[in-house]
Image 1 (tube, rainbow, N blue to C red):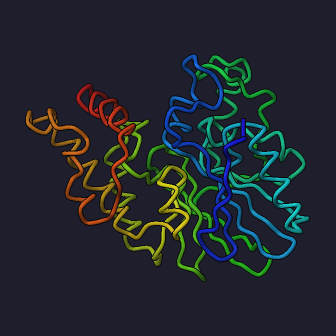
Image 2 (cartoon, helix red, strand yellow):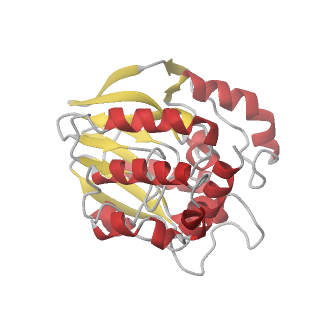
Image 3 (cartoon, rainbow, N blue to C red):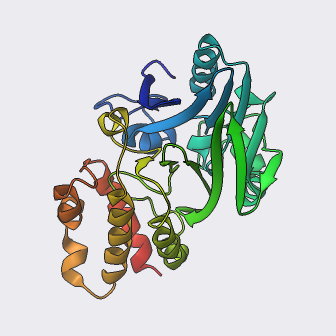
Length: 293
């Protein structure tokens, strides 16, 4: 894996390591697996913030092979000091941790708790199926609400939100008014992994809309949008409207019958998001989860 990984440079001091969204191509196996049928098919990026000899890696990607490429690229760029921040505990964000086992690894306390709780199953390949992640390296520097770091001369603010996963960590680069959003925001739509928390997701999205940011880089998005500098704050609004509409589906039969393309047509027309057909399956899963509440 990693042969189709490409490096994008969406902002000063920021490198995106992007893979997937390649029609007809699978990275791991023809058999069903969490790499190909999730992250790779939808497209996935990890990021590095770099200033001089210092780098902060935001997620370690979908395999050890990917992580090795990331580390090698940073070393080639003159980086000597690497720290890692995990956006949350899901496998497509922690699979390359072993490559950074000698680096400080930072995460929200709930990320550590989830990884510890699921460690045996993740290492055995029974958590979300194959491929297994073994050994699973755990973060040892933990925080609760916010944490401030510096990468070289660059200030970086870690912020906890409950969107997509209750342990999500987002990064704000205040000097650039830039947000690295992990899986809290996606293009085309969010993956509702914790439907019981949808009201909290909406509350945290409302708070995010007031953050002093102008540009957003999600982990799952269109590579051409990321390469061109990312998304505007309309991505937050589009996510809010999508979740609110999902809730309305409980009482609105016509909404349930719509395709995703119909469901988000207004937000696509405004340019806040783009339509990517594989997210139709994500939408059907999201809808089933909401209707089951």
